[in-house]
Length: 624
Image 1 (spheres, rainbow, N blue to C red):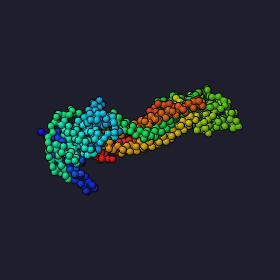
Image 2: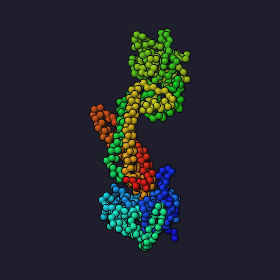
Image 3: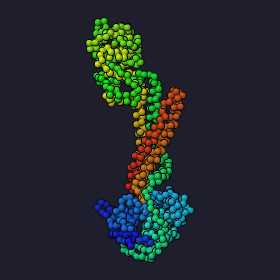
Image 4: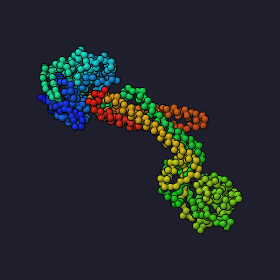
């Protein structure tokens, strides 16, 4: 029958420099089976601990073969090697390697938690193992509250948690007094009697003599392999537990515990992130609030919501283009018009050109200075420049005068009904308005829509619609652009101040990056312990990413709470003094703030999480 464990020509070397290496193991061959308690003895540096690390799946840089139940562990994938450490081997260390901030019950449970064993089952099993070790009454104590011998018994209980077939113990009695050492050896012997293989490293001949088999190593080679006695297997200690990968929720719980360990430091980092989040959310909410305030102020001013639209050279605007304009967000309606540039007028036998002759809807004329709007065909309203050409002494004298307007051979008689305040960019030209449809009716059917007036839902859409018009290659003009200017200033200020807030958030992200890097250093040994009991690299990465996420959520929530406080106080004051609410209560901005905080925190945590997951388990366990 095949042995449980077979070692075939195991060799291991360490490179001191790139070209110089030191051979540690020089061809180790052995067959080991359940029911054996094997002592590896030899001088320091002979390779005993190195061999234990290889057997424990912590070191894969060797030559030769380790075969367990007919399977070569060298052929294992990374995931299979993690499972090997969970299912096949339990590690016991000389310095115990318990996680200091966990109770001894949690230290035993952690191995099963890495294996996704049901919480109820793992708690019951952990208590049973502590009872076996005589420590069930200390379940809620921290490792620091126990003696060395008691801590070693906890380490043994943890090694047995997933009921592995092999127990590897590196100097399990080396730091203990005689009485504690005897208790440990008694427990290990009972483990062997339950049908397991126990391999322990020891310098003590007294300890070795209690083992059923002694393998002596010298200068990396086995120089002696002797059997002291046979141990009778008294049946399996317990049925085999087949663990599964750890659940994400359990990794999240570990992350939360780690955050609580350094609560004051992590709270400080979260507050730093909250400042940036609060700044961004407040600025966005203030910008929206001011936009809504402007909307309310200009609500009844039609010219503030009106945009004049044309094409280059006042070419025809096609129906398809008009349909696209009507589909734009913020567009309420369109008023169709015509405009001609090459008309002329005659007054007292003097002919002069008209720069722009347009027709307009009755309700949307510019501000009237003198006279009346041209409400009927045959009447025309002119600007001040036009009026000065009719009467140089007094522009008001132009009202009521008769003029002839000509366009491509067609001449019509008009009466000047009024003079308007021209605020357009062409105010220094001779401009005039006639009644709606008058250009079309008097100067030919070929003069169809080449000018439209777009009415917006409200003034907050001004910049958006103008940008959309530009993307459609249409020219825009707004006669009353005071609302547009205010909104432009608000948008610019929002962008600039949001940028400042984002910079403060980046500074907080750097703080998270540094804190997590420090955390990796502080918890190097803990990471090594988790890897030794079967945690996968991705589990370690997830743990640190979750910690970054928790910091991000905390920062976002604190930032939103601060934002709400400032918003309520500010709006209370402005409502009393200005009868207005200037900072908007906009829930999507609060959600955006929390989301930004989480995303930035996760990005900051990626590098530390990668560093933690790539730590070598052997080096991590040795870290002090």
